[in-house]
Structures are given as structure tokens and as C-alpha cells.
Length: 528
Image (cartoon, rainbow, N blue to C red; front, side, top):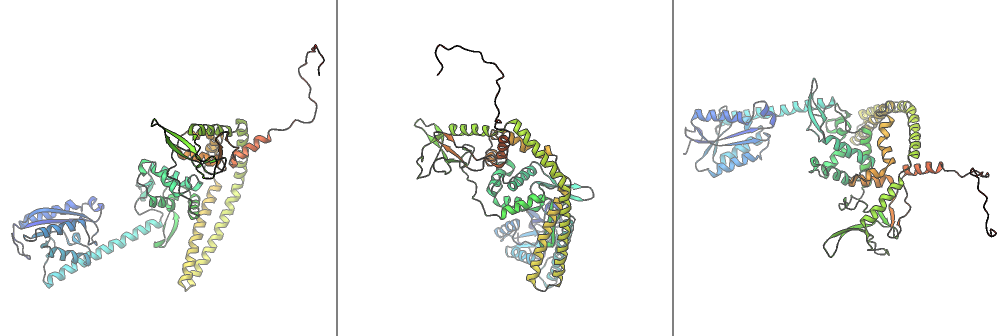
């Protein structure tokens, strides 16, 4: 049925276009279904037949919209018959002059006619003037809402709250009198915390190893390099918030931190270091000693492989692949090499008496360190005051400076001093009151020193790599015939070995007295 563009007659075919900007509008009752209901009531009152409905969830300033593109394609397909396009309000169509007139021209070119229960559209000068004024008001409202939202977000951020999208490892929860606040979201929070602390301590040598650790958990199967970098560089995980673009430096957040700020700074320092070679992807649980055991002849790391026999069975082997090595290609059964390594690892375990003495020494050092904590806290507070004076002087220079380059340099230095101030504040707090007792702090360390073999038996490739790094100071050398050469252990085990050696002393130069008398015996011939 053909119809008049300015006064469509009853019986005309119509489509409905509904749009929302976000899910919040749905919760407040301004959703898609509410708009559709108003448009259907209008169509029924005017006698229009609704043949199709298009729903959109996109900002009103955008011109490229999926649902709108489908609507225009539908109009072009039925251009000959013509269709009405019903919208609830002009703000639901577009919230800007650019988007409004561009979409309106596309609908008109496709054979559609825009109608609304709240707006009288037309092509004459007066109608377009009124329409333009309504678009201007909608655009102003959109800009005003954006300004108010930005102002509220900035205020929340200045008060230590995180007003942006929820970072991984947290979730937003309602707090009485404070609105939404970030809280830990388990188990993701603990997984991210372990990854960050592992990279800071050296357990993970590169970002690739952090990514591999995260990917091993089902909830992080989609993690990529970019997401891993975000985890390592976002101060929100250290309990601080800020945004340089808004002129808000880092400040203490109102949420629980996954790591302390000192650990975060250690991570940033490690990221600034010379990049390390990424961990090999072929290091698997099949061969945990690959590239950690060296050939005794040439000193190069051994490689490994699965060898297939004539019967089709596969057998695991380690071997040296160095071209100039006389042991090149001579395979060593995995069971033999790893069995010798487990025996070596068990021999590294110190005796309980030596470990008890080492624990006493550690406890004594802990007590001495605790006595020094107050002096360290006072030194940190003095450094904070000095840093604040430096920041004040730089701010005075910024006010009097005229060169943009000098101002930028001063601002960069102020930001560095602010981070240093945060670090000193945290150290002063930690020194004044340790978070854990000696037993809690050294429980895992002493457990590992007591028996690194127990951690090796866990079977996890990450734990086994950690055992190798913490127990031995260099690559282990293995001879195909004689086994492992004398290993160079790491510093903690070397200290325990020195303690053990110190308990063994030579006997003094005095005569020995027999405590058991010997019987006299007769020999049949002279004793030579």
C-alpha cells in the first residue's frame, strides 16, 4: 500500500526501532520493552500494522549501528511498498546532530518515513527547525550527563574508590554509606596474587611463565599477553588508585590489596630489566630436568625426546645434542637420570639437628631485626618528611615556570617522589608492626629446607622448576657412566652445610685410653 509521507494513512505497514545505551536503563524501566510497548500503542491508535521490531543497545552518538543497518537494509528491500519507522522519542533515535541527520537521510533514501508519538516530523522549514531544536536539546542532555558522570567518577576516585569497570580478581559489592566498593573475587583473586608474588620473587622468570601459570587454571584459559601485562602493571592490585589523565596521582584505595606496594614496585623494576628469553613451550612434565641438567663432558644443557622402538612402544630419553661433544646422541634412560637426581636431592636434605640449629639462628636474627624495626620506621618517617619538602619545592617551581618542557619535567619528578613517599609509608607501617610471626613467616621456608624432595614429589612442573632454582646454584652436570658430579648448592643449603661442617672437629692431640681390657693370647709363631 502506498502512503503519504507527511500524513500516513491507517493500514500502513510499520517497523519499530528501540534503543538503549546500557543495561542500567533496562533496570530503571527505560528499557527496550518499555519503548516497544509505547510504539505499539501508537501504531494501534493510528491504525498502523507493525511487521517488524529492531532492538539496539548502543550509544546515541554512534552512526554505525548493527540494528539500524539491518533496519535500513530491510527498508531498501521493501522500498517499493514503503514502511513507517516508529520511534518512542527523538533521543531514542540519536543524541547528536551528526548522527541524527545522517541516519534520517539514510532512512529517507531507503524509502522509510520517520514517525513518533511525541514528535511531528516533516520536510518543511518550520518542522526541521523544531526537529533541530529537539536534537540540540537531546545532544545537550547527553553532554551534560557525560559531564556529571565524569565529575562523579572523578570524585569517587579522589576518595579512593574505583569507579571504572571491575578488574579481574575483584567484584563490586554494595557497602552501607559508601556505595559500591571492590572486594576480592575468589578464586581469581588468589590466583592473581600468587602470579604477582611469584614474578616479584623470581619464581616466574618472565611474563611468558606468568601467562603459562595463569592459563593452567580453567578460569584463565583465555588469558593472553596483553591481559598478563595488565595484571603486572596495574597499581590497583597493590591497593592504590589514580589516573594521570585526570590529574589524580596514586592514592590509597578503599579496597583490599592483593599485594603490597613494595612487591608492586619490585615487579615494575623487573619489567624494566633486560628481557629474558621466553620459557620454552616444550618444557613439559614429561621431562622436568630438560635444560636443567648439563652434559658432564661439554657442559651444555641436555635435551630429551621420546624414542619409538620397533614394536611401536615409546621410551623417554635424555641426551646431549652438542655436535663437538663425544657424548653426542648417546641416550640416557629417563628413569636412570631422574632416579639419580632424586637420590641426589635426598642427600641434599640436612640432618634434623642441623636444621634445628639453623632455625635457632634464624630466630635469633629475627629477634634482632624486630628490635631494629622501630629505628627503621623512624628513618622511613624522616625520609617521608624530606620527600614532602622536595615535593613542595618542586610545586613552587612549577608555579613560577614558563616553559612547558620544564613544567613536564617537574611534574614527572613530583610523580616519582609521590611513589617513593607511598613506598616509605608502607615500609614504616610494616616495620612498626610485622604482619606475621616468625613461625608463620618461616614455616614454608623451613619446610622446604627440611626436605626439598617433598615439593619435588608434588609432580607439578612449576614446583619442580622451583626446586631446581632454589636448591642448586648452577646446572647439574651428569655423566652417563658415573652419574651426577658434585653439585653447587644455593646459598641457604650452603649455609646449612657450613653449619654441619662446623659441628665436626678433629680430636685433640692426647693419648687414648682403652675402656675395654684385651685378653692375652698365645701365638704359635713369632708375630712379625
